[in-house]
Length: 429
Image (cartoon, rainbow, N blue to C red; front, side):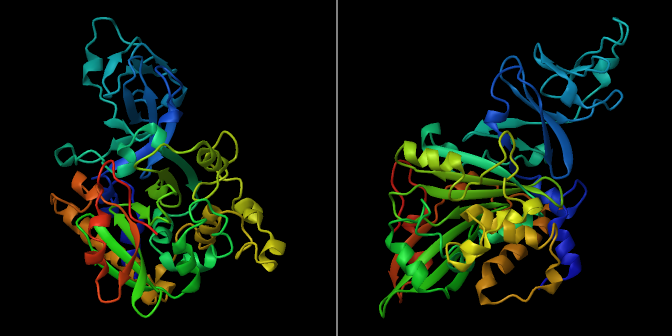
């Protein structure tokens, strides 16, 4: 159980907060490449960590992420003209390049050098894995570029989606490192889920609904081992990588299925972007897999067309079907793996009061993740270098699901399976 003060430190991410300073030390998934697909396309509103921003792609294809409000009279640059290598405010014509320099000021005399004194807040951006990433922290602490396995693969091997979640990012992320809920919240849907179907591991997962947890610190975050009994000699281990500050890799079910991953990025203190990724390190995703992902199956969501808001949401009670619940077609009555998760996480309210929690042994990963974040926030406040998850080497990891003798510690028995080996398949049963 956290104190109220600790909870506040974890959830507040605006500029000037302790956690906000920590999260700005990492490259942040800002938007999908598909949202700004071509030079001079319409600018896009982006909100991250409480900051209202505008993303655009200039005439040469360069990416810009600027403060939304013009330095002149604070009109929104969303209404600006994206033209001739800059974004021009529609109010008085001030124009900014991707670095935030004011390159034209038609409302001032031609001889004026006033524009040289103007600098719109701008954040650097890169593209990897179908995602536009940005860095919002101090330039002197800019970390390695992200090298999560899915971000480094060809486009044909990766599918990325995002959805709006109406909770603080911590509620969503804690769901991602909570393996014990799978045996309950998803128990009647795993046979049909494209990531689980037809795997030996699914049998073990359903047979033992009381996993034992062993959690250890890794260089980049945590290794979370969920152990289920198989027989007198063996355990079935599902080993999750949590990479700071907000990434998880889902332990695989069979090497024939794509891997899954998530990221949970704060929009503000009461909403976040939930990113979902499927990928396979050694082959292209098949047409049937892509069709399922586009449809919103598995870890992805069914969104309202033209938006990233889910069709099942708080306003319609997540389309709960009590008949399906009674008939054991769905444990909660909500359809879809993703919706089953976010409906319960949002049911806690936008910001959960963690002083009311009563945590058990199955919550070991959640407890340690909170400690690691709070400790890293203290280090960031002291301007420390080398935070967990900043180094690209911390990203070159995999999750795994393995059978191991009961006498073998999971971190030893699965050591090789937990390292990315480009061009080589992952380990799973």
